[in-house]
Image 1 (spheres, rainbow, N blue to C red):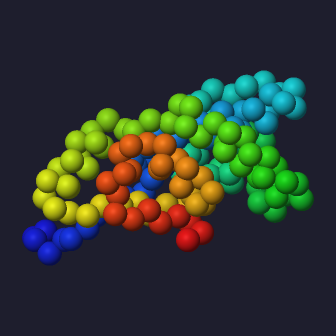
Image 2 (cartoon, rainbow, N blue to C red; image 1 turned 180 degrees about the horizontal axis):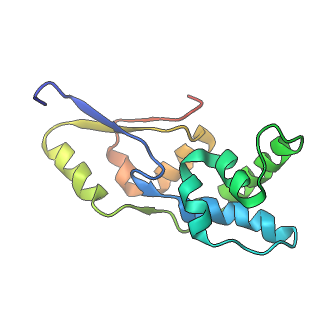
Length: 140
């Protein structure tokens, strides 16, 4: 059934890596910088795959049609960029899965909606991604 498969592509956030702690911290810094109380990680975790839109929505109830959304999104991006590898981890079992793919001579890679601005430094910082045959970002 799978004999014709030559490559496997994965999503990044929430599939291969747990980036919710750093994404949530970037949004939460915006809250605390404005004198608002911190929110627990578990409030941000479900929105990790939705990027800035999800994080700003959770932190402030802000939607993309808000007049300040673009400026706040860029502030979020700067916060995230400065910390995106502090607490991000590879999910349990992912290294073993990648090893099994490589043992079967299957190529593997990543396709994510995350912008290359973040994807490239993040995947360079995590040794697992050295064996990825392709990393495709949302803007590439």
